Length: 113
Length: 111
Image (cartoon, rainbow over all chains, first blue to last red; front, top):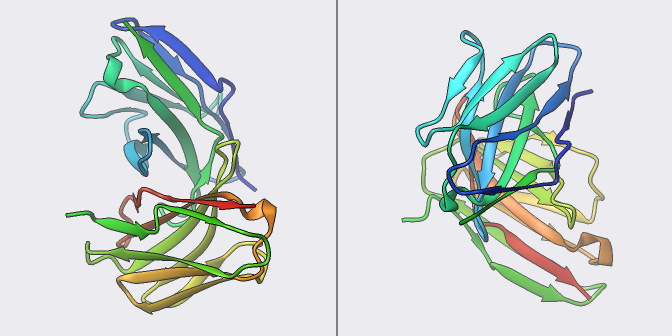
């Protein structure tokens, strides 16, 4: 069975500071990895994904995540955050593509001026 | 236009009642899902339908019954509601091996 651990339930950070949201997973097979973002009172939106190929994946709004197989991690990073990045971030894993995602418990990113 | 829409947005009801949540997608996707997000923000898949056929059915009490009248709709009916059913329910859709598109959720509160 797969599982995802997001160790930090909340990460407070000042605007323009760098941030890293941690995600570790466990799986006995090859996996696909995802980060989703949930803004207040909205559904989840796909931020970025790792399916194969380059282990470093990037989103259009400056986030990046690196798949590290040896450490079974898929940490999310951004070199300089904005107030608008305040949201809940969910890491997810699947061994069947997008069909059946197993989510972590989420990390709330709080960006303050 | 909203891609995946759920109604109602909020639902407050008493224990023992029966209620339904509706979901519609206008993306032309062939697969639809119901996810449950509990008070600790833990998000777990409940059901998945592909072309109106049930393909994923996690360990969910049989009080929960999904119904897909067509590819664009997946409704969730819940009988004999219990306090533990209080959660946010998300509908989602996808096509083939594409990312899921989520609705904005229905916050169900059982009193």
